[in-house]
Image 1: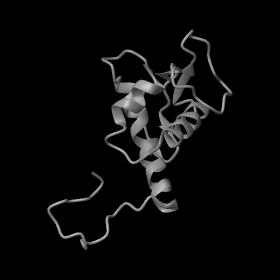
Image 2: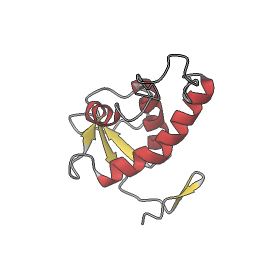
Image 3: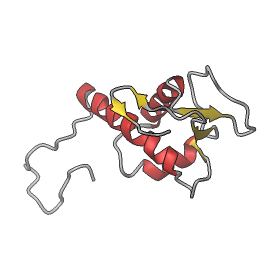
Length: 122
């Protein structure tokens, strides 16, 4: 996982991902691009997903931590890319932390341009 190949010599070339500050920045950039697509496409067949379900579905495909994913989701919520509601359905418009059971849903108002990328969602 993450570049280790057990059949190779233990003195193999260093792995590309070092878990340093640069890696964290690259992880958050990738999350900002990929999470809206996953959420809009629907991880559970179009059913809104909880933070716990989202993390469980992507944890083997990313070196990102739950905190990094949560931070990016808060940023995406603040940019109106997604909405976050409690498991009871109450909006969490200003919460800086997402709970494991909070539900992440696509934004009701789709944006044409967001950040540095074109979303083409209308």
